[in-house]
Figure 1 (cartoon, rainbow, N blue to C red):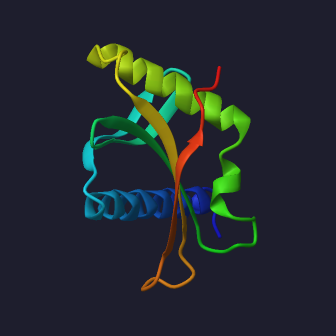
Figure 2: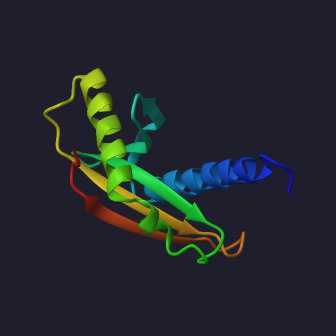
Length: 128
């Protein structure tokens, strides 16, 4: 594989996973508000509304279980990055007083026709 090609394939896999996660959430009647919000120090893959609760969703996608289940990649460091981005998003929107939670959607694509989606609600608390 040429230099840089692996990261290109990972980016494509990540986008596919985020698209699958957004479609999954919409089937559950979540309303997608924002995607791929970036700020200094962090990123949130999906911001959605579940009833009156704002949900910050981290999506992890894998092609194989060889590196472990995808949700294990949401380390304490990653949780802090997501938390920073969530606070920045809330601040920019003037929504610091809303109910919010952090979910993780873990997707394993062993077969293109049958991705395995695991949704972990309240996966972690706001991390500093």
